[in-house]
Image (cartoon, rainbow, N blue to C red):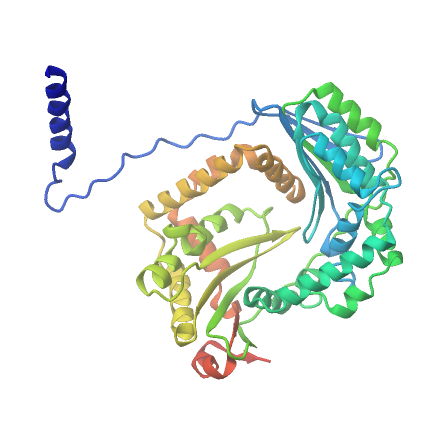
Length: 464
């Protein structure tokens, strides 16, 4: 009985404590977080083979797994104007067998190591990667090396892959966000490879084994490649595996450098999508790339406007206050020595013009007034938190190392936190003034032109 009374007594005390109302008008806030600390990465080892292949090894974590990623400086940038998506077709066909292994044998080998082989292609690079048990690190490196150096390019698989890419094209050609991105990039890059988003059925049908082999021969080689290994592994065994597996790879060409020449002016594009009940807004312009001194300030600017989730002004405005859209966002997209900023929103036809008006209002407001210190501090904590979280996984560390390597930023990982913390409200306002120039904004709207065109006239000039 005494025990029961004691438990009830403590329950009443706790209830009294937690049910006490705050003083009138007083808002209870969580305690302030501590000062963010700089990232300290485990020691990494870099070395280079005589043929030009570079390697970076980072011992990280307690789980007996390792992530391997071979990054080759070959991507959409290397495609001719009649070869859009050829880099992706080539990459996928490389996975379909080597002169030493069939596709099934590649998949079985990776599975026995506790992993899988993944391919990826972006504007500047092709990736061959996987996550396997630590004891198989050297074996997986040899598997990746075989795929990279000895692709078989089986003709039967090419026919199947072309059908897959035709289906992909059919789907993407109906998606408003893809249509908006394609029109936007074409508007800012013109005929530069960065301006090409969608292939055509005729192009895909025209991809032959000769074209695939020619693309591979011209755009793959040791001098273009960097292998990253992160996780728990035997460093000596991994180094020996890299040296033995890749030393015979041809050097190949140097990386292609093809600067874009972007000079935009205020323009409005409407991509007609008859019968659509919504409009997709895509607004933005070129900005300095990650190697520029203003890059981190631009990152903070982007987070304040639309890239900081619910901390962002545009999200608070057109989602929370106006209810125009569910998930607007902005982003900085970087390519080699190139970048652009954009804001995206999908809204109802009736509020297309009002939503665009509010987006432009928030851009103008940031240009006119520096953000309050409290707002910037919240954004800085948001950016630092995301950065630390990304660098808490093997895959995240490899992504950051690859980013740092592509853009030539030797101290990016170790100085990011310090540099973000050093930003001032004036820094953010200045980059908004310098780079978010209203007279240079490109506006793309995908929707039912008959329903929205008249309301958009003031945001022109309209470009066909």
